[in-house]
Length: 184
Image (cartoon, rainbow, N blue to C red):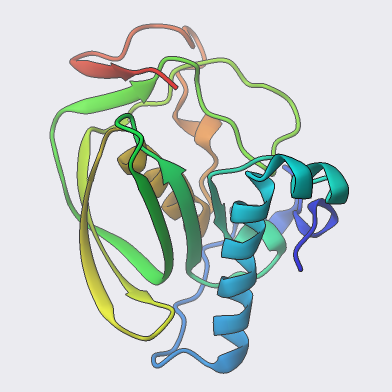
């Protein structure tokens, strides 16, 4: 089981590496790592389990955050309409995106970043993602709103990019031009 101690913190070199593709079909070891990442995200959202094991609540996790430089992400999040989206993907890739931007009005957080970093993070409002599921099937997913933001945040981790890299350092709370604000 992954715990908070397994999650590396901002400044660790793995967080700035470009993660390696996972060979397909995925090895059993990689499947177990990805399954345990999803288990962490689900457990972190259960108040009793989170309290018992000292887990910080999260809605997404990328393998580099547990010091595994491979292209794997786990996402478990309710969108703005309350619909649950749960994805564990190998080699996720954004294959298309909108011109329109969106951003979380509350800013973004990260399990690897302990302090709050205020600022708007511009993201694409709509994206299409391709990846491979735990059972080895290729999927193509369309995402918008919060789900699109979470996918972009986690895929950024696979490319050594942190969410705060996108924040305007001169004016962090400057509204995103043509950006759709999303409440969370």
